[in-house]
Length: 299
Image (cartoon, rainbow, N blue to C red; front, side, top):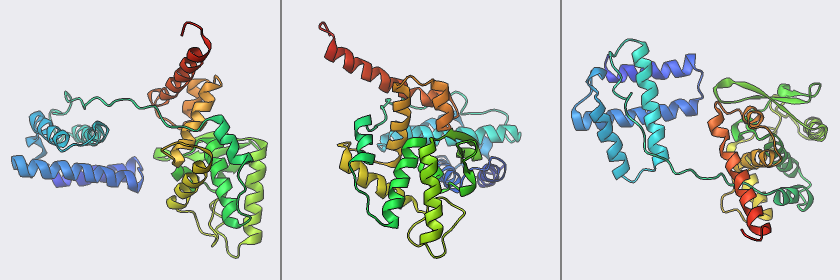
């Protein structure tokens, strides 16, 4: 099997069988094309995938590191490559997998940035939002991100049909088109109901498919959500990093600090494995250390 055909078949598999997003498929395509170009230039590998060896891949990874690429990015590229080779083994295009014994570089673990509860309270109690459709939408963006922990893309694509008032849940469609249920408070449901009603009353021809819309009644863009979070978090917090994901981290951290079960937090966030959720226990431990340092006479 030639390299270009194998890559094209793999991308079709991700699109039609795994139902990955266009953004994810584009990332896979970029990483595989980058590796393929390197192998062609350095080793003249351009036809048969069976020519690719472990040492060739190690050379490519070493080159990425020499170019100053971060370990996390290298691991992402290696993960894409491993998925491709596993696919080719299943298709029986390869007898062995040269990547089976390759491990990526270690990534220093960073604790996620989050706003503390006092700062979050200020979002609702200290800020006067503009008395406009934009101001109404901005506040709704912040409420949904913090009270549900959903991702920015999930927020933008949240449909009115996913708001289940009877069960008091939002039916979120996450990565890989996996649905998860997020319980919401009666107050948030009331705000959502008011927002959707006002959308029909105030706007001329609003999009009634999606919950959140701009002043023209159109679906929100990622930039509007990002700009909103940066703007208002900057008014209540001194965090250097401010993004929609910070509110997701805040949601999870506050749940962990309050003693929520880690498996429950995993389900609410839509993580595929518990390992991704365990980072929030580290924030709780750091908080305990701070309390100990401040309160214990021998700390």
